[in-house]
Image (cartoon, rainbow, N blue to C red; front, side, top):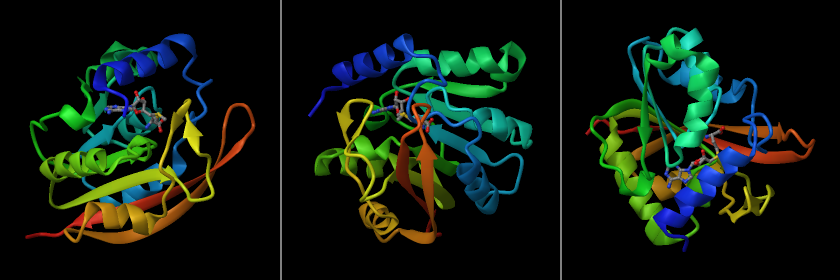
Length: 210
Ligand SMILES: C[S@@+](CC[C@H](N)C(=O)[O-])C[C@H]1O[C@@H](n2cnc3c(N)ncnc32)[C@H](O)[C@@H]1O
């Protein structure tokens, strides 16, 4: 198991060494995430968090779509710095940027929607997965939505040089437990900047009301 400090160093080095559109997970437009988010939360004041968002362009598109309560969390400030620079000072100031290790984080509020693309899949050990679910439960209001995207069972075994746990939407739902209902699943065949195709699974879930 990689410790929090080593993990942070790994991700800081990744973002320091590559442009945002050179990393394998880069998407100019995260279409599937946007589609699922729109299906889950319509209100512009819905509290949305992109957990492990890094330099993702999701925040740009959410702002463009009119969402006004957006947080981005990442262990490495360098990724989010790229997103801030891309957005410009005025737009970046409309977003809450949180530097934290998800597994150590104490959520300051409950969100209407939790989005995670390609973060949960790094948690290969049961104890880490349980800690993630514990944080997720504290950060998602009853009735709130969760979107988690991981490499699919036939996807790559590694991401950014780290081993991943490949899983189906049903496995994601099982990890979250009975408190979360699986509403929708989706597939993405993501083409990396190097031209490789990676199979992702998306799960949209809803936390039960009580
Ligand atoms: C493969 S990238 C995906 C980035 C983004 N979600 C996207 O789809 O473009 C994984 C991201 O998760 C972040 N990350 C990894 N482990 C983390 C942790 N324990 N806590 C917070 N962020 C983490 C990394 O810094 C990186 O930005």
